[in-house]
Image (cartoon, rainbow, N blue to C red; front, side, top):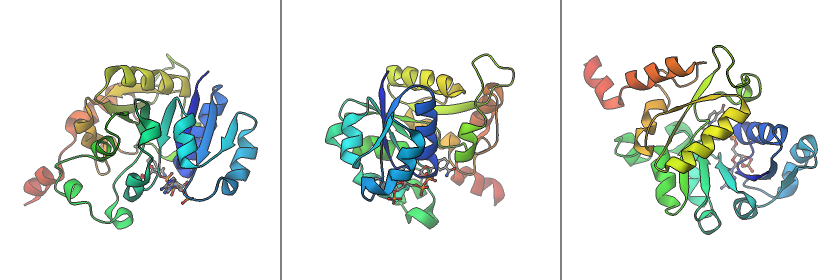
Length: 220
Ligand SMILES: NC(=O)c1ccc[n+]([C@@H]2O[C@H](COP(=O)([O-])OP(=O)(O)OC[C@H]3O[C@@H](n4cnc5c(N)ncnc54)[C@H](OP(=O)(O)O)[C@@H]3O)[C@@H](O)[C@H]2O)c1
């Protein structure tokens, strides 16, 4: 079984750590402070979990999840993530993250920013449009009727196949939104962002998503 490293162990990171441990993975969790600050979560997760620095979590993970406030993405260690699959859960909220001009003008996407920061990693956008609490309540076995689906985006097909298998283990169908540059289709304010969706519903939502600029034109 593989090890999943987590950079960020807040609402989403802690929930993904719970799912990972429940499905037999070892996890190494980290936050922006000292590993000791994660002792309660490590105790809850049990012997498959340990806390470490972000660099150690990045080194230890076969797959590494980045789940931090987007404004901090440049602090994600680059070297230890070379060649690895990196799952990006992050979203852009200017009121939290400050304004990022290339996201405001929609010339890039959140996951493309992380990919540019981690040039030799294989970034896959995932888990960004489900509320943290629902990660541990909404999963169902493969083949369940009306199983919830989650979208992914990424430029590396093998990495996406690996993440698709992980989502399936965690209880979710996957809808491939395409390359990283298509990740905007599942960003905040799009139809698929937040609500429970089956794969067919999510595909419709992705197709119906509109750029902010196009929505402004439609409104004016
Ligand atoms: N909450 C949701 O339901 C949800 C759903 C989907 C996606 N998201 C997105 O996922 C990301 C994480 O959201 P969240 O709600 O889990 O946030 P959160 O509860 O605020 O947790 C953020 C985590 O990131 C850690 N962190 C911050 N800067 C770091 C750094 N430089 N190095 C290592 N760790 C760092 C924090 O550590 P400290 O506590 O030590 O600062 C904390 O463990 C955000 O981009 C968010 O928009 C959230």
